[in-house]
Image 1 (tube, rainbow over the protein chains, first blue to last red):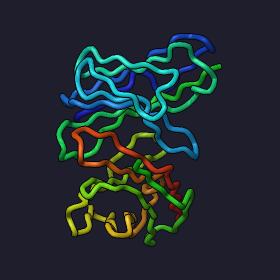
Image 2 (image 1 turned 180 degrees about the vertical axis):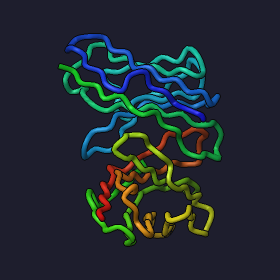
Image 3 (image 1 turned 90 degrees about the vertical axis):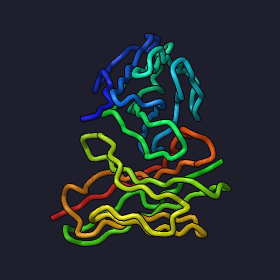
Image 4 (image 1 turned 90 degrees about the horizontal axis):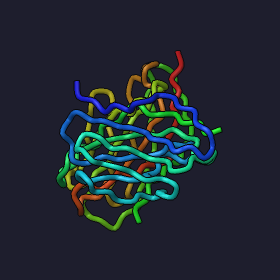
Amino acid sequence: DVKVTQSSRYLVKRTGEKVFLECVQDMDHENMFWYRQDPGLGLRLIYFSYDVKMKEKGDIPEGYSVSREKKERFSLILESASTNQTSMYLCASSLGGVANYGYTFGSGTRLTVV
Amino acid sequence: AQTVTQSQPEMSVQEAETVTLSCTYDTSENNYYLFWYKQPPSRQMILVIRQEAYKQQNATENRFSVNFQKAAKSFSLKISDSQLGDTAMYFCAFMGASQAGTALIFGKGTTLSVSS
């Protein structure tokens, strides 16, 4: 069964900490994405990556960075966590190419910054 | 910029009934893809149905079907014979086809509750 795995389901961090959210896919997908999900706001794109070492800013990249050193792994980094980054974070991956068949999602990480 | 609008924040339906979730979108592109995703309480996002804009025929997947009106930029999801397991948040999403690997743009979601 193909999967996108997020390393933590729940995470509690303190303000100012550096936080790493890890995502691994086993489908050899070219594209990987990080979204945050907030009530009433839907899913908003933070960053995405078309290929190893490539990254593109999404709609809300401020306060975040990403790393993709290997094709299967896409990490989201909160350089200095703040309370307004308390949210659900969803990772997803997809095949490359124009005939896109949608994403495969991970189960999400609920991050609380205190 | 493309936008996706889901005008119904919450809906409720009885088991075995039919329910329709609305979605409209705005784009200047002629070719694109539309999706409905389901997010149950377990949080795992699941693809429900996919529509390619250049195909006139509405997509169907078992009890799920869409009404795709390209001129009106409307993409509604119909769930027939609703089941308790259909209780979830449903997201409509858009992807342009002009560039490979373009990110999905999501609506804000509709919470559907199915009761017995």
